[in-house]
Length: 94
Image (cartoon, rainbow, N blue to C red; front, side, top):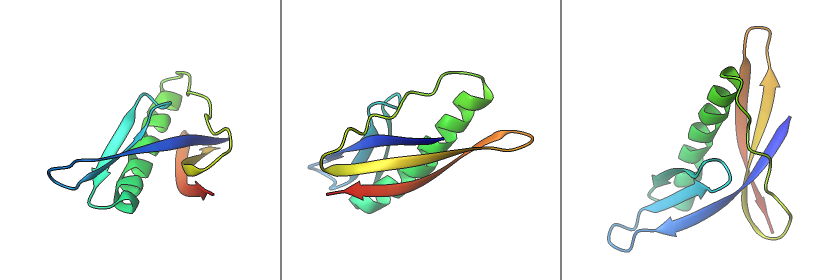
């Protein structure tokens, strides 16, 4: 299963840190010195969050990518023999 979520960014005016968040995935967010670093950090966090939801038998929010521009985070959901795993990658659309 492939889930794709829109990423939103905010920059702290005092520190310059960039926050990347996934509003559709329970507002999961992480930060970094750059947008790329923030998305890389968010990728791991989001994959872990989805894995926990699956392991607990809870619903995973549906994809919210509707086309258009921006940055999207794609999560590949793979089921193993013992447990489900969430793997992720970054996908940008123009």
